[in-house]
Length: 152
Image 1 (tube, rainbow, N blue to C red):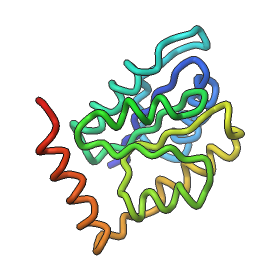
Image 2 (cartoon, one colour):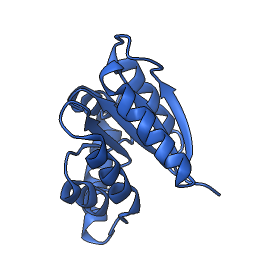
Image 3 (tube, rainbow, N blue to C red):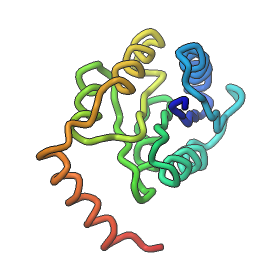
Image 4 (cartoon, helix red, strand yellow):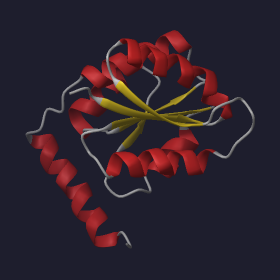
């Protein structure tokens, strides 16, 4: 069964999203493209929400969000219960956020990094395992807080 990656971007991240989605397909991932479908200006929040809800409803999936800086996407995605979206612009952080935080959405800024670096980050992030152990206890704290304080 193919690993599913749900991907979305605003207009600033559109071209990078297209390249990454095509790369993922070539690497034998199933890609669910939430949009946008052009460089025409759109609001990032509804796209981030859609990707985050999709991942939260099936935690076997991973998500990728791209906007100009990645900041807005990561803020919005992290409002969805069960999501651990990480803003990443380097390989060390891509690896660490999977190993230590079990992040399930990768956020990047198309105006911050080159497409070639973004592709390397995606590869690193998808390949890194969650280490569990002491990190699981730390994530349990976050999950418990989220359950107590998230309105349904």
